[in-house]
Image (cartoon, rainbow, N blue to C red; front, side, top):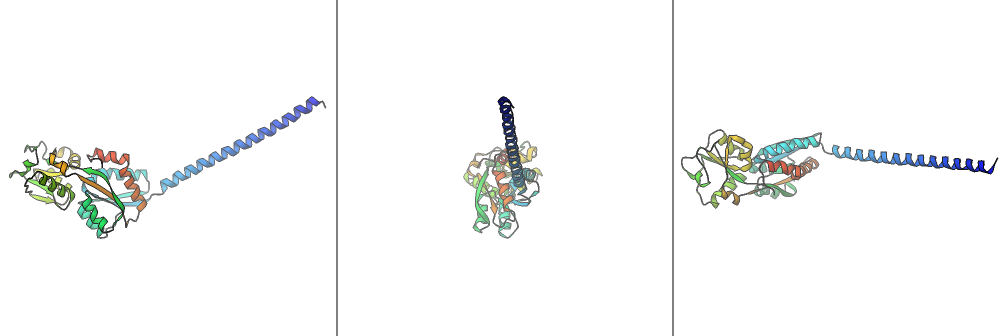
Length: 275
């Protein structure tokens, strides 16, 4: 056999071995890549499966529309979870929590009512302010009584409704009235801001001092009148996971949604102010 033929066969053997090595390396790399993908996919799947069960949220009445929207979004983002709300006056909600009512999250309309819970050791961590809210006068559609200021509410022929002084909207209204050095005698004090607004919606009152967010939520059922004294009575809204929460991971995730850009957009569109 000639030297040339032997050299050619030797080159073919080397080339074949190199190709086999490359194929093995490629297969190994592909396997590693597939393994990585599977691992990432599994991690993603397990992350989405982490949250489940019910999250009970006690929240100020003025948060009803925006929190209901966020609750639906939360359930959509975390299949297997359910958000249950209890809306009402922040003082009543705080009393329920300290009285042992089962809840995971508390969102109050004022630091004062949140303090009821924190002083009783009911909060897990430090509450964080997530939005603020400002007062506005709600009048009958078209504002037939031509109400243009807070002072106009002192007219004796007007039926005006306020929130009870123990709830944040009532405390804020009292502060604003004090800032204007006015004396206002309402026909009734209501247990929460929605009840006060409803008096105007049902035409049982001519006007009510409520939050801007509630006027906006009512649409054409009422008309809103701004007044400068409201700047002296803006309420901060704190939120916290509760110490006795039975689903703290989901509770923290709900609060994270409220504080996220997505959550803040929903709240801003409802008329809330940035914290």
